Length: 256
Image 1 (tube, rainbow, N blue to C red):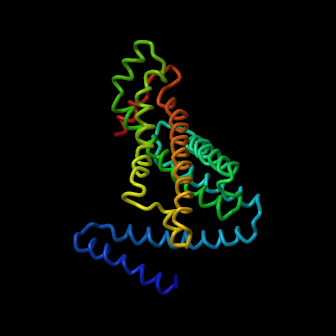
Image 2: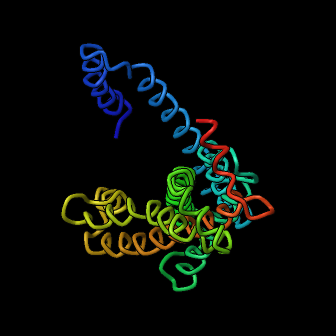
Image 3: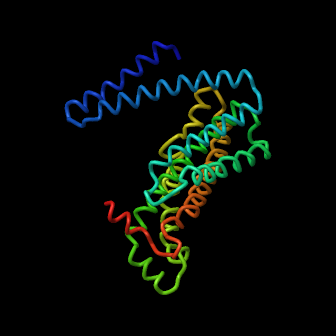
């Protein structure tokens, strides 16, 4: 693709800009900022990957994957409830496990090689899915603890511990975090052609080979999403209780 073709393609953004102006949607600023950030970030990423691919050092590859995990963990902080502490570290542990275990699995099985051009894109997808799942889990924990406050306090009054009294809340939070991933997987091949498969086909790879790689991605990113959401939720829920096993979600109600 030539630079001219890319710039001309970018002119398609004029359509949502014009619609926003006429319909007074007030999204022009956000759209332009988001587009500019995407351009800058992707160009920087392109140069970084070009350098890493050429150097092809194992330690540099591991460092880049670690940077992906750290960045994903950092971007979960704003979604956590005000009663939660050590959010970054909880997210880091959750995403680290959710990314590294599936990666180790596909490398050991020979599905992909331990090379920058194969590990980095897959790690990025796993980290992104873990980030989204954890954000949804955090938001739902906040909402569900407030919503189910009376029921949880009743269970506590009857002698249940925090884990038992909030079991339904934990399950709902995990389910909310992973449902979008499951729903998107359901539409693969019927409604949409997934991103990796599309890229491989455009790159000239045989469609059946592209399907194999896409299925591999489906298997590992679904696993990573569930693992990240599960670990983050179980490491977080206890913070909605104090040392005397009292629910402190009322603090959230007062804030709202």
